[in-house]
Image 1 (spheres, helix red, strand yellow):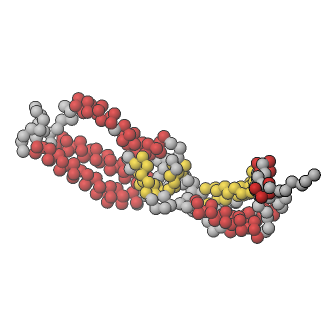
Image 2 (cartoon, rainbow, N blue to C red; image 1 turned 135 degrees about the vertical axis):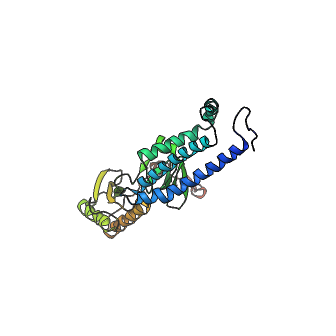
Image 3 (spheres, rainbow, N blue to C red; image 1 turned 180 degrees about the vertical axis):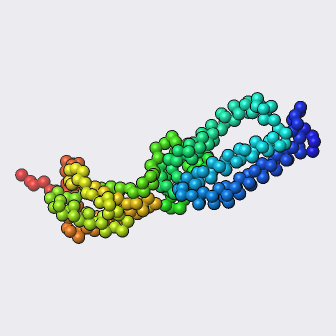
Length: 285
């Protein structure tokens, strides 16, 4: 047990086993500290759940760093003597672990600046869902199909992120549609506002609005703008309900839908005649 692992060093098999045991106790103690002490203490405050989670994570990582340092000192490992070796090894690991280090630093930035938080609905890189967990390397996003997507933290720093729940939970949805020319526009405005008011998850304040966005080739184009505060978890269902409501109201009030424009190619190039049509008898002279 007293056999030195490295020549001319005080690191023996016994000290290495003791170090592994101390590391295990530090990790166990960090989990107990974060779960039972920090979590219960923060729950008594008026801080947001996302901020409580971030503070618990930072406190846990700080405890791990302190525990590892004390463990190394207890087994007689002088960190100053390992500085040169650690520097050389660090350079080699730095090239091979660039992505991991980048995600680690990005995780610290996320926990400090809080551009996203637990419970937020985000869209990044074609992935849309609710943030369930933020770690130092990656973030777990759960989609509406109950699929957990593991997103590297660096993507939240380097890519464009849409946070539906940032600061204010109210979100305005714009529903585009078109109607035929000649439609009674005051009547159209009235029935579209009714569509928004009848939806149970649409806000009355701010009020819904109907925007006239332009003249199309065969249609008058509009956008129904509706505010909501409870559908950040299922925006597609909310949009679908509004589209169903718009179609129903237009049909009930006999408001025409725009027809697609005729295809000019079909008029310029009529279909060829069949063989029977081309074989008409030629009159005799």
